[in-house]
Image 1 (tube, rainbow, N blue to C red):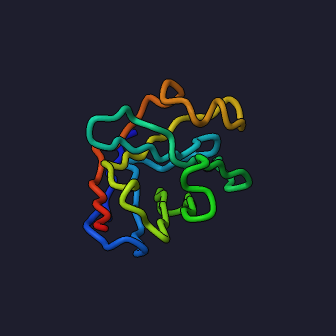
Image 2: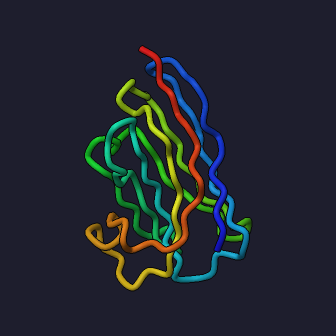
Length: 127
């Protein structure tokens, strides 16, 4: 599965952005979708994940309550609505997808779970 992330840009602190993740193939049942991010000089970190049926969502502590992950299986799309953005949210955001064996936070938050990644979209939050 090839993934394309889009929707990044520059926004002031407190603003909002909506990222999109387009899959080249129909995202069938059992595919979890996740977002990770990598800030300059830092390691890539987990942001959010959603199970194939949208029944379960998981968030890192740093974005919980501000970001919302969603998906539209009919359109093979994943989304990340980012609200109340902070300068520390500045990073390249990547989407990832994988048939999920488990619907647990440790499994879905791990980079090694995912084989398919998009190339990333840059989000810059100005102070």
